[in-house]
Structures are given as structure tokens and as C-alpha cells.
Length: 300
Ligand SMILES: NC(=O)c1ccc[n+]([C@@H]2O[C@H](COP(=O)([O-])OP(=O)(O)OC[C@H]3O[C@@H](n4cnc5c(N)ncnc54)[C@H](OP(=O)(O)O)[C@@H]3O)[C@@H](O)[C@H]2O)c1
Image (tube, rainbow, N blue to C red):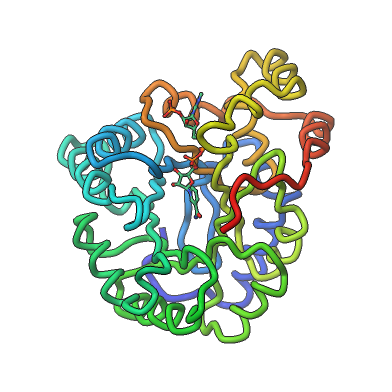
């Protein structure tokens, strides 16, 4: 992983080629991370921790790191940063990972927008880390620019490595951020699944080396059956001797997205990381692309 400062233009060009969905994730060796425009590598599959309490977040974080996952997504608002921090610390103490090998994401919520710097410090304290790899603005708000400035200052202070935005769905919304950003966001984390595909946004932000990260990769709790039971997904899963969850995650990766399936079940977590030994064909990718219904489950 990068330890230095932002990349030069030539390296940025290489990154753009890597990030464009058609070329990403198509090499012979399994691609388990992408190079962000900040110069840091980010794993393409990780653990989501929304709805987990501190105990289950600790157990899930530990299970994720033990099975090879290196990306953990959390937020102060989820109330489980302490648990994530404990799981991380336990995995470090047990020799499973070093801090540098793990990519931790947290978020600043609207309730903290008027105290963004302190919100970042609170997350670092609860996670028990010196820095987070990625800090996101959770959603557009009345003072995005001031929050973004606080994130840029946190990068300069070494508390945050990469900056991202979340729930920015339109070109206009992203353009507004770009109009004041001194550091271009590295990631946009959006609701993004088979029934709501961020294709147009992805095509637009690719030129900035911005990667789309998917929340609700399975549609979220209460909706997973719609995705796992979809007959196209089930048919492809049978063909590859994989589960519907694995086919969906494989589609996410081959489409150029980063996915953070949430789980409190160690078997599911291991299953979700076991997606690097098969490949969907162009025809299968197209069948899955056709499932897009522009259907969102949430409206924030
Ligand atoms: N930025 C935002 O606005 C935002 C919003 C929502 C979520 N997020 C992030 O995105 C993450 C993902 O979203 P999510 O967790 O809400 O929804 P999700 O990942 O689409 O679905 C989670 C559900 O899938 C189940 N599941 C996971 N792996 C499975 C498997 N292999 N087989 C069967 N079931 C499986 C989980 O149950 P088990 O626990 O039983 O495995 C859980 O019920 C969140 O955890 C959070 O970190 C961000």
C-alpha cells in the first residue's frame, strides 16, 4: 500500500484505465483490491456492519479478517465502532493481520456535520485506531462543503487516508462536490444492487478515478429473498456450483464495483469472500445487467 503523497498525472492515467469497469477485474490473477485515486489500495469485498451491535460487530469483524477479508465498513451512527475496533485488535493480537493490512471505513452522519472534526476523532477513539482508511460523508446535507473541508484537513493531519461521499446519485450532485474539492473523492458509496444499478454514474465518475462501492448488495435485510430467489441468479449459481449470494457478489466485482455485504453469520461471511475462483461470462453479466429495475429500497 501507498505510504506517500498523491500520485502524479501519469500514474493517474494508469489508474483510470484500471478503474474503467470494462477493464477492471478481468485479469487472470484474482483481483482482490483496486488502486484508488488517493494512491491507496482498497479491497473489493468487505464486511458491512449496519444493524450489528458491538458484540456481533466484534465477532463478525474477527470472522471476516480470519477468512481473508480486509475491508470493514462501519459508521459512528451504527453504534458498533467499539465492537469493530475490538474485533480488529483481537485479530491483530492473534497474528491474523496487521493494522496496515486492514482497510477501515467509517462515516460522518448529518447529526455530526456541525462537528465533523470531533466526529472523526470520536470514530478514531472508538475504533481504537490512529487513522481510518476511508471516511465518507454519509449523505448530502446543508453544509457538505464545510464537512468536506474537515475531511481534507483530517487527510492532512494523517487521521484519514481517503475521502469518499455516500448517497450522491446524480452527476450534478457529484459535480457540486468536485467544484469545491481540493482532494477528489476516491469512492462513492451508494445503494447499488441488481435492481438498482449505478451504471450511468459509474461511467461518469470513472474519468476521475472514482470507484463506486455498493451498499445493500443483496437488497438489504428483509429483501435478500428477492435477490437470492431471482431465477436468473439461481440459474447462473447452479451452473457455477455457487450460491446466489456468490453470483451477486461476483457480478458486483466484474461490473467494477466494491461490495460490502453485511452479516452476523461467520459462514455467510466466509461464503461471501469465496468468490475469486470462478468468473461470469459476458452473456451472464449481460443477463444480470438486464435485471436493473431502477428500484431503490431507501430514499436517503
Ligand atoms: N452509506 C449508506 O447509506 C449505507 C446504507 C446501508 C448500508 N450501508 C453499509 O452497507 C452494508 C451492506 O448493507 P446491509 O448489510 O444493510 O445489506 P445487505 O448486505 O444487502 O444484506 C444483508 C443481509 O444479507 C444476509 N446475508 C449476508 N450474506 C449472506 C449469505 N452469504 N447468504 C445468505 N444471506 C446473507 C445477512 O444475514 P446474516 O446476518 O444472517 O448473514 C443480512 O440479512 C451495511 O452493513 C453497511 O455497512 C451503508
